[in-house]
Length: 355
Image (spheres, rainbow, N blue to C red):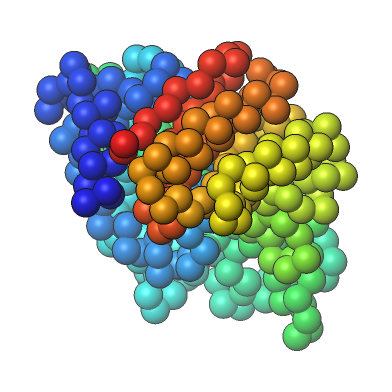
């Protein structure tokens, strides 16, 4: 019942002032894109789960791509859809012989991965037929019902096999591969779909997974290419999520880590039962831009739960920087009981509670 109430509250916020026409949808806040409603789910949703089991990575891929898109496609005037063009059949690589995610070969000239006998120079040795693109996310931006731009996120490998051993792919090798592959993908979109004209701007970005088990990051976006024709402007970028607390978080952002420790200490004292605090920090080009926090409390009564929500909201003042956003989800046991947001540039919080 609590979940239904919370979902109802969120849906109400989304639909206030909206109709089912994409032209009239509004975002949840001024910094986010509005979905084109009624929302049409893509048949790629199951494919993504099968290709990437890590749920956090799947969300980072799409959420990060949306954030990169804001530099090129305005969230105040455009709505989004998912996989309007590159559906399951376009990407399918079940047997490795077809689809964009398949390997390059005579009967699959559009495959984005090297052919089974093709050599790829990792910068640390020659790999034969590696799988370099593991998944592909597509976000399409519309003004009314007119296509205004496309963003593509490619999940790329950080290692490849050389003589039976996994070796790291150097940044130079991956950058060269990304430039060639993204240019090929953009040309395919323009030739394959009538709605995608030569003038449709297309952003392609590479999210490189991190397979180092000792690192606190799943990986992140490292390159982007922006195409207004078939030629792209390529840029090196840095966008990733760090678990908090973690060694990297503490060493790279000591002041924020100290504030997080203070917040965690304050929250742990709210109720007689222990409260648990974990988080994830989004970092772009070396600067923190958003801290997502999960608070698990165990209130036995509605009064205790409300007190916990109020205390967490008050304790957010521990974070002094207004150059980044803060998003907090509060659980009472296994149930979500509140969400708190503090937007970039503001010290004020917005609270949604089921009580």
